[in-house]
Amino acid sequence: MIQDLIIIGGGPAGMTAGIYSARQKLDSLIITKEFGGQMTHKAVDIENYPGFDKISGFELIAKFEDQMKSKGVKVLYDEVKELKKENDIFIALTEGGKTIESKAVIIATGAEPRRLDVPGETEYVGRGVSYCTTCDGPLYNGKDVVIIGGGDTGFEAAIFLNNYANKIYILEYGDTIRAGKDNQEKVSAIEKIEIITSAELKEIKGENFVSQIIFKDRKNGEEKILDVQGVFVQAGYLPDTEFLKDLVELNERKEVVVNFETFETKTPGLFAVGDVNTGKVKQVVVACGEGATAVIYAYKYINK
Ligand SMILES: Cc1cc2nc3c(=O)[nH]c(=O)nc-3n(C[C@H](O)[C@H](O)[C@H](O)COP(=O)(O)OP(=O)(O)OC[C@H]3O[C@@H](n4cnc5c(N)ncnc54)[C@H](O)[C@@H]3O)c2cc1C
Figure 1: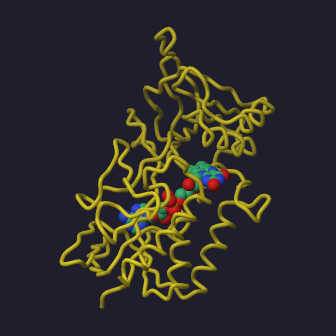
Figure 2: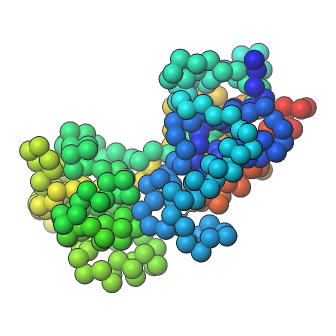
Figure 3: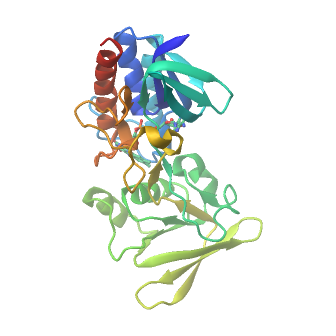
């Protein structure tokens, strides 16, 4: 059976597309590895989603998911490994061995945490190296930790880890920190947080678990050591677009180029919304708006 629409990805963009597709009475299917996307990495409350003064990422996602499922949207928990288009029909091939055909597709695959590619990183994942502060922060009660990345995500991670860790370092590669004023003010009020700028992480070391990191002070080239038991990598996110191959045009950051009125890619009937496209503002409310818009244009494409 050929679906009207496949939505790939179950973050805010994909779930909103799901809600809108149900209201358009499209026969649609969401294929996603899990629901929530990056919101599940959110360490502190969300304070900029309309309707909620403060809400945790998990709570907001649960509300999205309940609303979407109550509309009867079909869900397949799987990962799309390949997408192709033959004779005007899209064909999605999944990790679980499924082949799903559809008239139109919305890509809402967001982004994955960026890895650092330093010695010790892969070796110590789950043994001191973490990409998710909310998931792993409580395991570092009373321990000394370092956060790699001085942007808003790194600062929010530090604010969250203040509930658990004994000492928190924030290591920033640049000469100045990138976090916004709001987060800078919150962090400066916490004594146990120390910010180190112009610092290039060189290696993560330990035995069974992480015990130290080595970084280069970029101002004088000196190598320095920090004794820490946890390394939280907050070095940005990379879009998940490998599986799209020639169906889309990508920019240098591997984000999908779209028409920002319709969110259609260079392939008719294929749309890309949320953090996966080249849009500069990567926020929940933006991802939701794009998911909604794309469904309206997908509906027009399907019924043309
Ligand atoms: C720590 C942190 C804090 C943030 N704080 C805020 C904030 O306070 N306010 C705000 O507005 N925004 C915030 N953001 C940004 C916000 O989370 C993102 O803009 C938003 O989640 C983007 O939604 P998305 O649906 O485009 O992608 P994502 O949230 O990345 O979701 C993508 C989904 O697609 C799935 N997927 C990926 N590839 C495949 C595949 N091949 N097959 C099937 N499924 C796939 C993933 O599993 C995931 O479920 C924050 C982000 C982070 C990381």
